[in-house]
Length: 69
Image: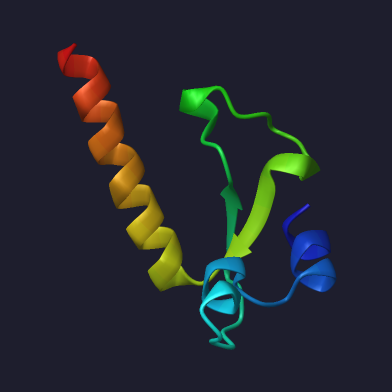
């Protein structure tokens, strides 16, 4: 699944939004599974390591916030 994603979409989705050209190296769920996202191709994107790290950090913060409620 990972190889098929990168063959189909070789560039980082987030970098592309900002005009940067960076190879995707991470398979990412657009809406995290923990937040109700589906585990299928409609919820998958390729990100570079840096963008994936930033997104994962933000998701972890949201998760900790939800846990405090």
